[in-house]
Length: 502
Image 1 (spheres, rainbow, N blue to C red):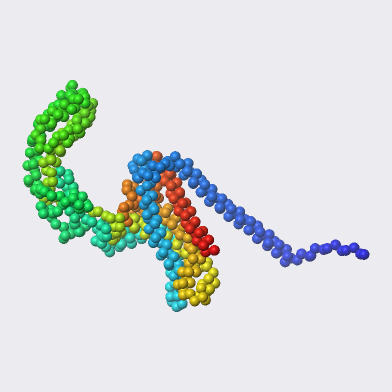
Image 2 (cartoon, rainbow, N blue to C red; image 1 turned 180 degrees about the vertical axis):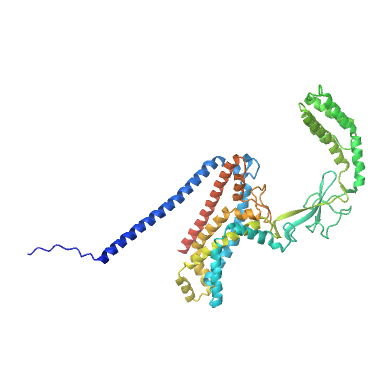
């Protein structure tokens, strides 16, 4: 049997050589692109690690329970994020409530209800393009728009703080009696000069609380000319009290240059001697204890501090006597101070620089992101879903609401997560709106001023006290924890919706 011939390699043509070189070139380009992507990812992760390590190193020492429970303070040890955390939650909640329905509804309209008319279809395309462009507009531009549209409402309803359309707000004229007691008179108007304002008169009904449940009876209305003799009489009759008090304190100084030496027993004797020298219509027992304490604190003081504390001791008796003689006395013609009381549901037009305006401004920032993300999620739903629903006799809206929208919910949730996360960390729109990092109390209604965590951190980081740098870093950690917790909750909701869909 003849030997089998050795297999010969096929002859390489120039075309095969070019193909092999082309394949090798593509493989090298592919590997190069993979390496570039790996380097870019590594750099991004490295920068994130460095940033987190820096923040954690600087801020872990400032993390404590007081940081979560305390409000703003000018002292680093007393500063906390409770007020700004509540403000952040409120404006982000308003942003989500406004942006999600508007964004998803707009996406459904653009994707599922495209017009058939050529002119309308062209307008539809222009609107869709502009919405995508709006997603790239700097957030500070939206802050300017929010300040004009929501805070001032373009001046249509009058200047801020002088709104003529308000719900849940009661106005009062505040009168302060000669004895420093505060009285309130209910009023309808909020502006000085309103025609409903009635001048102060003996017939005016006044109350000692804003709840109007303690009406005051037996008020005495006097003029400035009538009150002046009362003041002069009080000062004249208390001259003996003042002179005795000053002489007794002077006697406790061995010489003019040395500070007084007053024991607790001597303070009691000086106070009783001064009270006995005066002419009183009030009961001196009401201020005797405080007078003794004030006299005792004079011991060892220098000349300037001595004079100030001595005058304070004299004023204790004079003020108590004056309040007793002019009790429930109000001066006619004294200009009242206009004050108000707001309920939790208070809303006024324009919105001003409050929580509602801040939330709606953030809504402008994230709305294009929600719309674009929802569009992509709806577009990713297979057309067979819609066709099957329509083939079974469903209407267009039934097909959208029962088939398309449930299938797109996981993708929509992803877009909403990204949008709300951006809103939570925005500071520029709030800054333009007039937000501040230093607010001492949490908002009580939608019109109240507020502080947001990013603004508070920005405020702390700009303070010259280095202790606030640690507090600012701790605030960043809290902001990251809140952000990650919110994202985790949203991801859980998205996965749950995806499981139900499957």
